[in-house]
Length: 367
Ligand SMILES: [Zn+2]
Ligand SMILES: [Zn+2]
Image 1 (cartoon, helix red, strand yellow):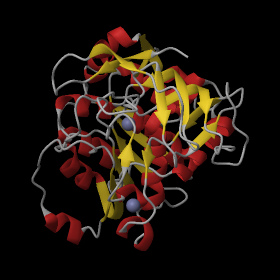
Image 2 (tube, helix red, strand yellow):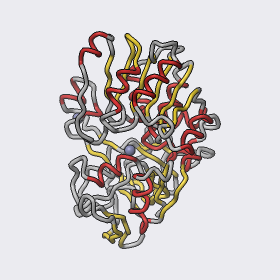
Image 3 (spheres, rainbow, N blue to C red):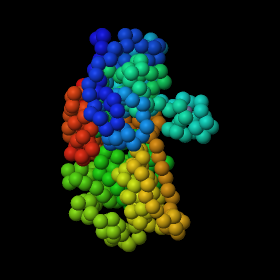
Image 4 (tube, rainbow, N blue to C red):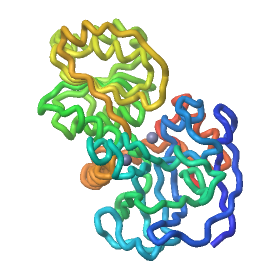
């Protein structure tokens, strides 16, 4: 094993990410795993983290969507989350967050994604502290005891898993909380990875029609191939009033049964409320980062009898469902095609910039 490893490091918010070398741990804990990173996805959240919209420790190795090959497996770690045997050389992915299992939210309220001691790779760890390799934008990552690991078998490709990324598990979790009815007409705001994943999951939940609002055209093309009945290009419809009007026209004047916000800009939330029919459900899924405030009229929520739902991150079981979905339905929803831009570790900053400017559908870092 090499004595050191390279990683792309966020030293401080809004400063260029640069490659640094750290000592590589030489032996793992009995239930730990050292993984050689094959590919790490660049999530929209990484852009928010880079901007400082969440308070995270620095320096930090970003990257919470990762596939890699086991380099060293602790002797006590025999199996993955499903009970499949694990050994050196296996290709794996994992749930990026760890819940403690014994706090108020884990134990009493069964809300492990809000665990008071929750940690996430690529987000919660200061990489100056051992074992240093704590995020996906690196040659190696160390998976601590308790990580939910999933062995990947062929033909489930790394590109498909990373193309779906944390967007798919986020959408699965959010729509599970929201609850959908067979035949629902769904509006999705946003054509980024979360919007496209929500489209796939909504169709999987029996949506009769999905109207997707977003851009640019390349992403809308993917949305149409995934099965969106209508795509509203925000360039052609730059005003919220026009978009609301168009959604009403497409829903016999009533509005949608379900609206799923996957944009992350506060101003789309009041627009979403306007797009809801009376008695509709609204899922606010895109605000992982704190993008600020917006004013809404609560009267609309009362009068329209709206059900408002938030959802944060995901649990390991959502990852299991996502991988199952990618195995079974991946030909219908070719998430691997979302991977449009590849970058070396040295170009990790560019990877974040292309994501920020919507130049890529999905950028990935290939160490
Ligand atoms: Zn993410
Ligand atoms: Zn907990």
